[in-house]
Length: 282
Ligand SMILES: C[S@@+](CC[C@H](N)C(=O)[O-])C[C@H]1O[C@@H](n2cnc3c(N)ncnc32)[C@H](O)[C@@H]1O
Image (cartoon, protein in one colour):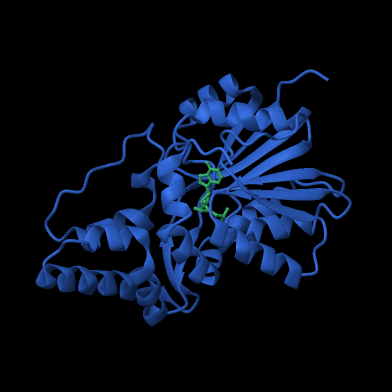
């Protein structure tokens, strides 16, 4: 298996992937309202051959497999543990048109023209060379085939992350991620998306905003339990003195209490549904 995104592989096929696997239900629930837009966009046809990039524990993979009933879905991911759970859940659902493979989508040897559509739910923002990665994906997509990617808009537009960071900052100035680094925000700028996708062999690129709350917990207690496991919380509290850590967690509790509703702890998010078409000639 060739891996070029080695740092991402170390994280996702390591601690980060372990946490996502253990907290799979919470992660699935958190972004559920964003996913509803993906479903509503009616992007998949019954006979489609689909590839799901960065499929994780396979929530979207399974959802799409339920639509591509006469086609097939291949889920690809860096994380062996997330894939293990994805396989189990797929079998539990009785789906027979799904396969999973561990690999780095930037360099995975996809068969040429093997897919009608490539999708990704927040799994295509972490490439160290996005043009090479999307060109590799484009090779697997047939002439006229489609691409549909969910990705975050900028950090300042994502209240749920900004407010979480502010709660945990406890007097520190936190750096903003550079726009072109392999972070959750690497596809936030539509001009950059146009450039990357265009150079990779996709046209008719459209970025449609999705503004839905993230559900960070069913209630305050659940949100605090979830938060303790989040990479961002771990990263921002690591190395804090016990008193500062306590203050940070108290701030977080206050933030979640402020946003607790009858439907759970809800904070605003900002995502893109990015769609495009292969420019390949038939
Ligand atoms: C934020 S999670 C999203 C998981 C899933 N699609 C979902 O919506 O719940 C990002 C996923 O992308 C995967 N990923 C990141 N870089 C990748 C790469 N180069 N090739 C394949 N998968 C990758 C990670 O292993 C992780 O499972």
